[in-house]
Length: 441
Ligand code: SAH
Ligand code: SF4
Ligand code: F3S
Image (cartoon, rainbow, N blue to C red; front, side):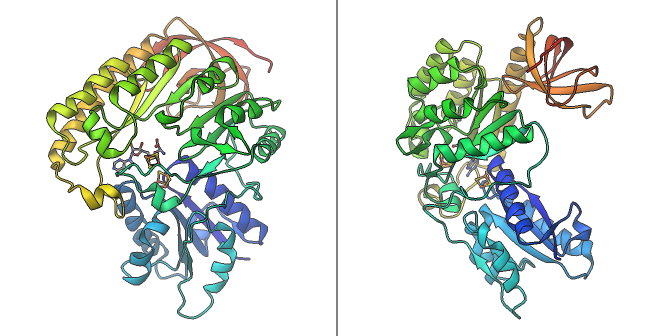
């Protein structure tokens, strides 16, 4: 029986896909192991969204070879680097890897691994499919915990000019809502309390005449699942009805990740984001009118080609207006194949990108602290996910509805239960408090 070790990089979709990969292999009698040193086969489920994600994998492959010190071990590259770098990885031989499988080829993994026995062959399959949704694979090898990932759609048709995802993951396609609901029902039976619905562009979900708002309603009818999260939505797909469903449905968490990317209309247009700064701000107002206490987070890219200091200041202005609960700031990284890489030279110096990143992170740190401190004195429902924290065995931690980490003293409650916590302190990264009640649901 061959032993397989899987390591996952990148976004939550890759986490979910690794669970699919493990399930496909376990069903074909491979043994899954938790340690690299026990493995005959190492699978790296990779990300390609920025160059540093790629570099991490190059370093990792060499370290694995070094660590195994001449022992026989086969290395397979899965995920977004597979599609993006197939030729380079296999043909130029700079990386000692043995096979490659793209995000739509995981059912073929056992065959690819069997082909490894053929002398000299480096098997690969990076074909992207218009239909593959793995609807027929129920990931039984999931990470244990209170949350389960569920991919409801895959791929992306937006072609934001900076982004490699449409090339690495192919066209948009959605699973049938009944199939998603069936998976969620099984998850509830297994004891999961929360599901996070995933898609590269999750709110453009569409299947059999149902949209994302319908899907949220169908999933929320599953007894036992108490919280529903989703990521990542695109600002272009927020019809009012979806906002109403989010607001009216107590199981749907009050947190929206609303990627801004840039605050200047000229840059947004070059990025092909399809909204203007004003349209984005109007959406934020509409969201907050309907759901006043909603948590808003975002992604921002600094140093997109030709972005001037004045245009960067427009991003700062949007941040000051919205005052996000959290923001992920990225330096623009040119990706092969993308429209930006073909049309716009990467002309903002790295030092300028770095300075802009530091500035936005400082602003965000202040806003996060301000937002978190505003919770002091409030009482939040918290789903316990850890019976310890990074720093202490005397504390437990969980998440509130808005996905913020809440830490409180340990007591007569356990992982998977809901407690109410009165917030007494806040830092930019966590809220702290005292448990006031243990809920029975
Ligand atoms: N589908 C998601 C994005 C996935 S990538 C969405 O549209 O929200 C996550 C984030 O990485 C993006 O929101 C963007 O901010 C960032 N990103 C994507 N491509 C990038 C690039 N070439 N350089 C820097 N950051 C990038
Ligand atoms: Fe990339 Fe844009 Fe699609 Fe998000 S919406 S995955 S940023 S192309
Ligand atoms: Fe990375 Fe692919 Fe996800 S590029 S962010 S692993 S979709």
